[in-house]
Length: 337
Figure (cartoon, rainbow, N blue to C red):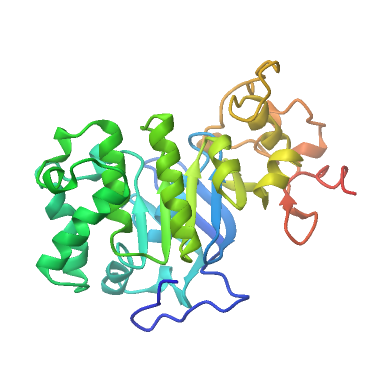
């Protein structure tokens, strides 16, 4: 397991690697009230476990993790909550201490590799700078580790490829290079934003097997994904987000086999990956809400085939169904054993 550094404390058997509690993030607007992009989000991730954060585009998945990493644009601010990582609240660290955490103790695989990588620097420069900046090793050892990191993610001829620029690689290779950059410092926590989106099925399996190896060594992994098939295959636990809120959380197989929130059922019904071949797709009608005009009560009720008014126009808090699962729907406990 990765050892904590710089005053961080190793999580105990009962303490999560990362504990996020009641996180709130809003975006300022020139006119009108701020937009609540993250609205009271809470979750835990333990060492050696993988957590899927799922939901449609705009549900707040990526903004939540950028809040934790303090990579928000200037128009955004965190108004409440904590994000305790290895005993320290990331939201209260100095900018200098936070820079020491990012890229070393917490790795991040961004969704768009072309935008996340510097097109004017070679892969060698971009892969080794984390090791050199954090003082993990010298230049010769850093290059050796960079070559090995490219080989680990399945990039052929890594000794030659390390000298190329990102634009000289295919989309799939750029994505794998991004994963190599995130893993090269052997972080305790890896956050992967749609890590398998730009790759074919064969490479997708290779990447997931590689991430599984990290899990076995004790790395905690948070995977932001819309692919429920990937979540089922790889992740131990899952959090479903809608309109900036957590609407369901549970062990992944329980959540996908017996969803308790209508939105989760809607995601499953519109998913090819987890449906039978003979089952017709049932897309969720409508679109995610405009955060400037958030529906009253349950934000999903205007799209929900199971909505019952006026009850669904009331705020829906997470209902604890068991010690491992909860759902933000007043009917969540109806199917409880």
